[in-house]
Image (cartoon, rainbow, N blue to C red; front, side):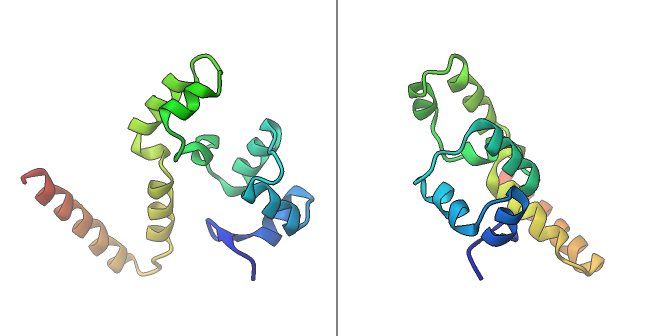
Length: 120
């Protein structure tokens, strides 16, 4: 099985895009550029915002891109924890827990740990 992103294999993503998994790999490695419309399509298939793909891009990197306002938008996105890849992966993992009692206990644990770190 090929590498997966958010639970989807490169083959499945390729099928959804009408591409081979090798073409998806070239996008992933940066060998082929991803156009804006293709990136938008990929974000819909993976059910993530387009900003998901730019999470690791710093404000300085965005500013070098030359697009007016991009650095400011990136800074806003970096402050919003709901746009982070980590948040999306955490939420998806949480909802893969099938036992509602276990899920509730994990939820309570996370709140308790967050509360403990607030008081430090």
